[in-house]
Structure formats: C-alpha cells, structure tokens
Amino acid sequence: MVELNWHDYLVMVSLVASIAGLVLLGDNRNSQPTDDRTLSEEILIKMSFTYWIVYCISFFGLKLHLPEDSWLLLSLKLTTVLSYLLTASSILSLPLQRMAVRRVED
Image (cartoon, rainbow, N blue to C red; front, top):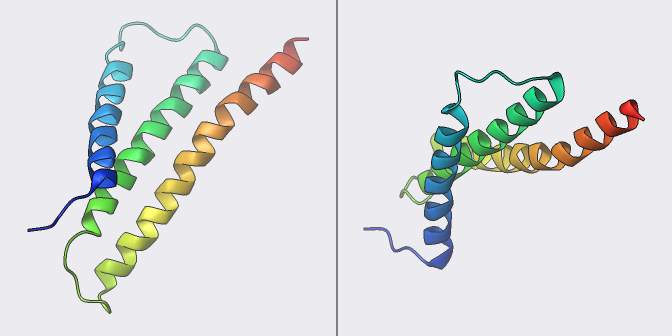
C-alpha cells in the first residue's frame, strides 16, 4: 500500500477537476465557435486540461514501486516533466494569444 500525503490528495482532486473541465468543455458539441479567436482559446484550454491529466496519471505512476534502472520509471519521469511543462506553456500562451489578437484588431 502506498502512503499518500497532502500533495498527493491535491493532485487527485485536480485530476478529477480536469476531467470535469474537459467534460464541460466537450459538452457543447452543437454550438460551433463564432470566430477563430474563440476556437483557439477553447483549444488552448482543452490542451491545458489534457496535459494536466497526463501529468496526474504519470505522477501517480511514479508512486508505484518500480526498480531504479527500469525503462518504465525513466519514461514516467520524462512524461511527468514534459506534461508539466506543456501544461504551463498552454496556460501561459492563452493570455499571450489574447494580447496578440487584441493588437491585430487595433
């Protein structure tokens, strides 16, 4: 049995929240975005949620007791780092994209 601390519970709650966010965003299949800006914002938010789900799953995969020289452990560590960085870049690119669109409109 793996012992969990407060950070593990926080990641677990954020995993459930990300899944709920994707379900809520994917629920509006009938309504098409009105313009390219809305579509790109929606895609960036979906990417953020998806990358965070991958991070949470790989984070909990690291809690498994794997041998230190295992290729699975190395790939889980790499996946965790890459998905964390991709989540951060998706979140940071949303306001940058809004500023770029606003600058083009002016």
